[in-house]
Structure formats: structure tokens, C-alpha cells
Amino acid sequence: PFSYTELKAARRVITTMGTTVYEIAFLGRPCGILSFNDDLAIKSERLTTRLAGMTHLGHFENLSVARLKEFLSAEATTAMAWPHPPDAVTRITNLMITGSP
Image (cartoon, rainbow, N blue to C red; front, side, top):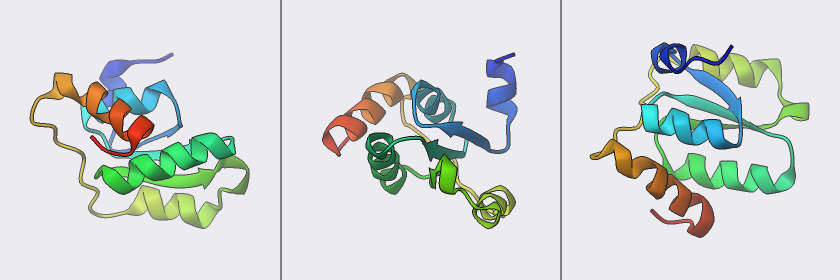
């Protein structure tokens, strides 16, 4: 079952591109994002080039064990730090829609 407590406590999170990415960003957790279509891959790539702690893992059908191990074993992954966490969802939404915060 889904738990915000466990999500917040996680060292890293792997999810598909969608609403959970916003929640993870708001919590400031490092995140590996998988996409399952071309449109979501573009959004994931855009987001991960602009936010620390987010990593685009690629299309789930093409995910390699080596890429997954690289993400999971990274020594230093900096989670995002927002000056005002309630602003996070708005800023991330703007990044995904317009490409700028």
C-alpha cells in the first residue's frame, strides 16, 4: 500500500512519469523516472535536466540492469531543496508545461 511516510523516508524513489513525481519533488527525495510513452519521456527528460535529484531512467521497456544499478548505487544524490515547499508543485508544473519555473 502507498505510504507518504515511507516515501519521505526513502533514500531513492523509482516511479513512472506522473503525479507521484510531483509528490516526490515536494518531499525533496531523489527520484529515478521511467516513462512508458514518447510524450512522457520528453517531459521526464525536461524535468530531470532542470531539477537536482531527478534522474531520467528512460523508457521502461529499454531499462537496463546496469542503468538501474547506477542510479541505485550512486554515492551522492542531492535531493531538491525548495525555498518554499508549497510552491514546489506550481514550479514543477511550469517546468513541465513551459520548460521554465
